[in-house]
Image 1 (cartoon, rainbow, N blue to C red):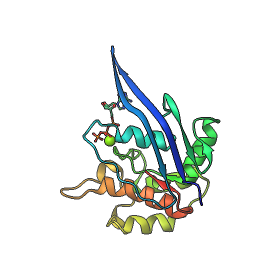
Image 2: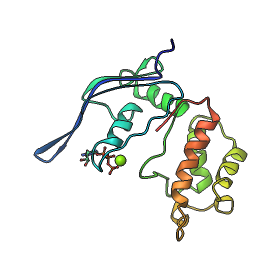
Image 3: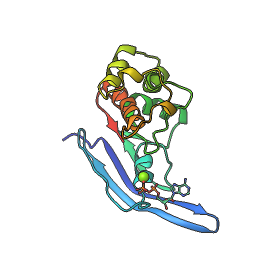
Image 4: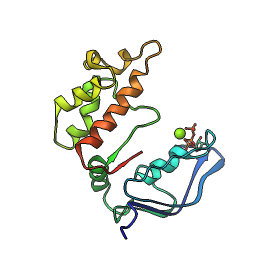
Length: 172
Ligand SMILES: Nc1ncnc2c1ncn2[C@@H]1O[C@H](COP(=O)(O)OP(=O)(O)OP(=O)(O)O)[C@@H](O)[C@H]1O
Ligand SMILES: [Mg+2]
C-alpha cells in the first residue's frame, strides 16, 4: 500500500505573548493520503493556521515530526525546503500576501518565476477565469471593489496556477 503523502507525529507548538505562553498545538498526529482532501474547522484562534503552516514546512514545531513524500521537513537546509515548497506545494494564505508593488499578473506568476519558469498565457487565462481579465495589470490595492472579492481571487489564482503547473501535490 502507498505511504501517506504527509505524516505528522506528535506536533507541539506554543507561542509566547509577553509573560504568557499559549499552547496551540498539543500532540497533533495525522496522516494525509495522496489526493485526499481534508477540511479543518474550529473556533477562531484554535490553531488551524498554525497547524497548516506546520504541516507545510512554514512553521517549525517545538517538537514532533512532519514527513512529506517520505522527506522529513525541518531537518535539512532551509533553501532546499523552500525549493520543495516552490515545486510541490501551493498556498492560499488567509491574509492573501499579495505583493503590493506587483500587478495581479505578476503576483500570480511569482511562484513560477521563482521556480525559473514562466507561462504568461496560462497565468492570464487563470485570472480571466475569475473575472479579472481586465485587471491583470492592476496592483492589489486597485483590485478591491464593492462586493467583489478580487484580492482573494488573485491569491487563489496564484495557488491554482502554481499547482496546475506541477503535478498535483499539496495545497494548503
Ligand atoms: N506568530 C505568533 N505569535 C504569537 N501568537 C501567535 C502567532 N501565531 C498565532 N498565534 C496565536 O496562536 C493561536 C492560534 O492562532 P491561529 O492563527 O493558528 O488560529 P486559527 O484557528 O487559524 O484562527 P482563525 O480562525 O481566526 O484564522 C492564537 O491565539 C494566536 O493569537
Ligand atoms: Mg487562521
